[in-house]
Length: 395
Image 1 (tube, rainbow, N blue to C red):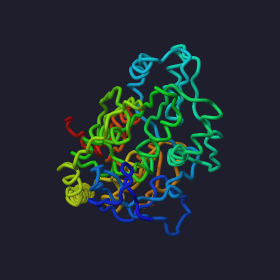
Image 2: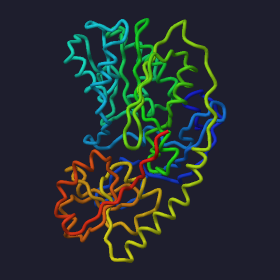
Image 3: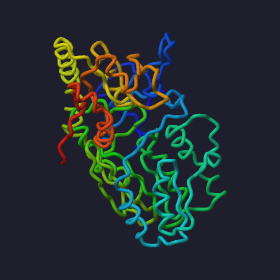
């Protein structure tokens, strides 16, 4: 099926970066799995009609759906106290305002409202969304919330909300426009939709190609999101940016109504996304040359962290010939193999026996800071951590 733009529903999508046939990043393999893996074309590009950066070749939602109950995607939360305070101060928001979170990613924000004394907070339940699939994640939630009949059913059962929270899910939506329309349908007149999403501006200015992920359909920047909101007839009440090492978190508070502004043109894709695509081949060659040099000098290399960033780094850059294993202390991942590369996943306690002395860290700086104290023996043996990703400069 021909992909449509996630923002304007047009067909003028233009691929800029072809990433080849890729397995879903969550499709970890059992040791005995020896058959052919599912693979799908993946590419990043833009819409020539509205300028939005997005996936052009996309995996079907059915392929993205997780196969393991224990899989979870954790989002940064260091800013949530500040955010909850700002949202509590919005005009018309009071202790009895119905506040709704659309997914598990909103639970910690809802808990902050409850601690502030808000009496009417809840998360939309799996039964509300009539989700029969197990396990499931944002890929299934976004589809249900983009369906007008589902939205009407939720509203009949629970009434309209004064504030709807949707953290880190709109980038997962097959149609960001339909998803936003679904959130609008949950709101009472004058209510607020709160959307949090990663700002991809610094990623697109750098060389973080591994951040392209089949589960993120749209790669918003703050600017392109503002254009999207205007196109949808939404008033941006406030837009807050919270800095993080690779992707800042942007929080947009939207309101809908007859007084919403007229749509404005979306920004034309600039040199950043074009350069991002053009730099891919050189970045792959650089990675391969560096790992070949390290291996030739006798270093034994592992990747640290068996998340989707590691999957994409190894597969996109074709690094498996120089990597011994992937290290991860998640109890359910040990003994599995990585999608695509089939590299074994081992606990950090196994590094010494395998002779690992060089780790490419795909962890966030926060996660790496927590992991380092547990690796004293590794560093005492002269072990080295290499950052997988540069930290792009802020705008």
